[in-house]
Image 1 (cartoon, helix red, strand yellow):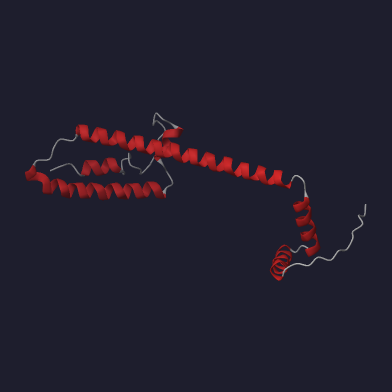
Image 2 (cartoon, rainbow, N blue to C red):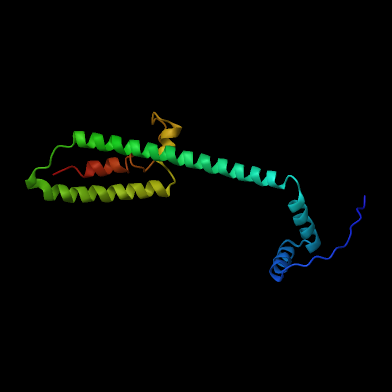
Length: 163
């Protein structure tokens, strides 16, 4: 079926003509086809509905992403708070005579922690994902060099016993 087309003349500003030329060249599409599609889209009665639908989808996706971030931050904050509470409860005061040795050992432990954290982040692992996947913690990857593995922070803590 051959559709009859009517030729019409439209006056456009030079910057719009330049954009039309660039798009036609980049997509290898005739300028008349691009103009026809743009005019049809502009004059379409459901155009605003399509725009609203697209915006709604995008807002929904952004909302889900924000909710995931909030959940991950809450998990991180709770884990951090539990660790601090346990550490403050279990750590005895440091005698003043041994403060320098404890400070040196603390720096050594901190460096080990940063190294283990760097390895974990480089491998793409996250505590939030592990907690969400298995809250019991029973599915730790074999050979994991993370914070709780033989080559991770446990080894740092064993090597760095207080003087």
